[in-house]
Image (cartoon, rainbow, N blue to C red):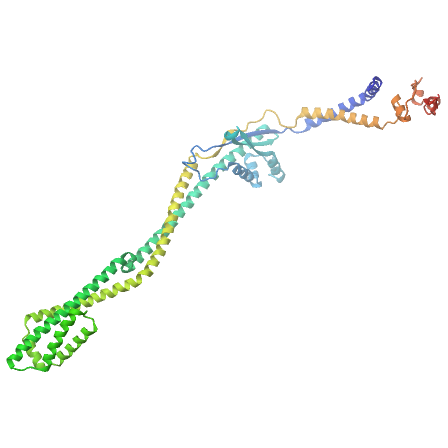
Length: 486
C-alpha cells in the first residue's frame, strides 16, 4: 500500500466522519433511553449445603437413601407447581394490589426462580451444595421469596426424611408382629399335632420297638408259665383222682388217656412254643376229655381239691388277664409303628414351615432393629441432611439491566452500522477517482495520469467534455509500447 492509497482512504474516512458521529450519537441516545427505561431486576441468592452424616454408616445407618441431589430436584418440582406458587404468593402478599394471583403471575414467579447445583472442594473432599435464587423488581422482595423457597426446601426435606424413616419403622413393626403371629400359630399347630399323636412320634420309634420286643418276651414267658401251671394242675388233679379211684377200687379209660395226654403236653411245652399246632392240639384234646368225664367223678375230685390247686387256678386267671392286657398293648404299639411314617412326614412339613417362618421372623427383627436405629438417627438429625449455609440478603445493586453495557453496545452498534454502510457504498462506487482505478478499468499501465482541477462548483460537478474525451481516448501502440493521446 502506497502513500497515495493511504491519503485516499483517509479522505474517505474524513468524508464519512460526520455521518459516523451523528449515527453514534443517535444510537447512544436510543440505547441510554432503553437502558434507563427498563425496570431494574434484583436477584437474591441463598446457599444450601448437603451435610454429611455425623455417625459412621458402619455403626448407625439411616434408612433414608443418601441422594440429596435427587431429593432437592424433586422438592423443586413440588414447590414450582401452580398450587404451591399461588399459596406462596398469597402468604407473602406478592399478588398485584386488589387482584388475584393470575396464571401469568405464577409463570413469572416460576421463571424468576432458579435452583442450581454447585460444588466446594475437589477430589474426595468435594461438598455438594445448591443455590436458590429469585429475581424481583425490589431487593427486599427478592430476598424474601428466596428465603421462603429455602425454608420450604429445608422443612420439606426434613419432614420427608423423618416421615420416610417413621414409615419404614412402622412397616417392619407390622411385619414382625405378623410373622410373630404366624410363628405362634405354627408352634401351636405343631404342639397340638404332637400331643394328638404322642404315641406314634418318630422320636419314640426305637423305644416302642423295644417295648414290642419286651412285650413279646413277656407274652412268651406268660404262655410258658401258663403251660407249666396247667401241667401242675393236671398232675394234682390226676393225683387226687388216683387217690379217689384207689379208695373205690375203680379206674376208667378216660382217666388213663387224660393222664397220658397231660404227660405228652408237658413234654411238648418243653420243646415248642405254647402257640404251636401240636401243643394246641393236645390242649384241645385234654379239654374234651375233661369235659366228658362223669360229673360224679368231677364233683368228687373238686370236693377234694387241695389249696394248691386253688392257687394255681388263681394264677391262671391272672395270667389270662395279663396276657389279654399285654396283647392289647402290643396291638396298640404295632398300630403306632404303622402310623409313624405318616406322622414323620407331617411333622417334617410342619417343622419346615415353622423354620421358614422363624428365619423370616429373625430377619424381620434384625431389619426392625436397623429401622429403629435409622429412625432415631433421623429424629436426632445425625444423618445426611440439608443445612442453610448462607441466607438470601437484599442485593445492593440490580443484576439487570446493565445500563452502562447497553449504552456502550448501542454506540458501538451505531459506529458499526456507519462503517458497514461506508464500506458497502465505496465498494459499489465504480467511478474513477485514482490512477489505480484507471489502470483497473483499462487493464493496462498508463504512462501518466493528470488529475482534473475544477475552477468552480459547477465545473466540479460536471467535468469538461474535453477532459472526459481524453479519459475515453484510444490507446495507440507506438514501437510496441502503449501511449496516450490527449
